[in-house]
Amino acid sequence: MDAGGAGRPRILHVAASPKGEAAWSWRIAELILAELDGKVLRRRLDLDPPALPSAAFAADMMAGQTAGAAAAMPSLALSEVLIGELETTDVLVISTPMHNFTLPAALKAWIDQVVRFGRTFRSTPEGKIGLLKDRPTYVAIAAGGPISPPAARQPDFLRPYLVEILACIGIRDVRFVVGEGFARGPEAASAAEAGARAQMAAALARG
Image 1 (cartoon, rainbow, N blue to C red):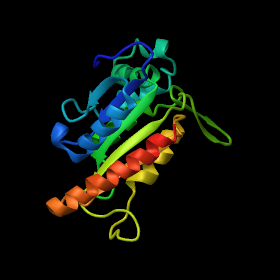
Image 2 (image 1 turned 90 degrees about the horizontal axis):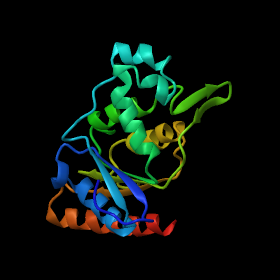
Image 3 (image 1 turned 60 degrees about the vertical axis):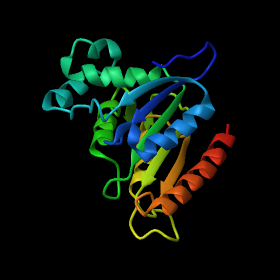
Image 4 (image 1 turned 180 degrees about the vertical axis):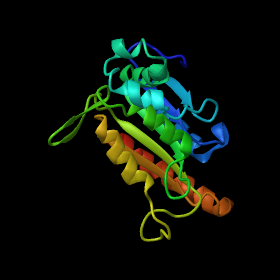
């Protein structure tokens, strides 16, 4: 946990790029975090990627639908830690590249650990209901080329997926800050960062 003062927002930063602190998505997230001025807990998926859910995880998920029940199940231990980080923070920041039109494997593994039946969502005849509190969520995305219309020449499954999967657990206030064109040379990278800064200002202005 980074140093922070009393009364400042508690922020969870989930960093998904395999490049770590050298990633453009990390750089965009740092700009956001500086403006939010909160107490930051970092979950570095590049340094410690979450395990994929196992057969035991799938079986125990049905019985371990509360934190107390899950505590006795080793297969759910990591899931409980990651869910606990979400439960004890006020703001979520995700930094990620776009990989092959969508999200990196490490971020998908994190999602599979925190989107858990009976614990972070429940099923009803009308659909899934999220059990976590909503909170401002900033997603810093870095893409090598353009991914937004009208310049996009590839599909974008990353943003629609994150909107839907985060809503599934109760997080609906999702704000994207996207840098596009980082792989197209220094001039394009500079323009991508400037565009991300403008989007960041708009996202933060929402309060």
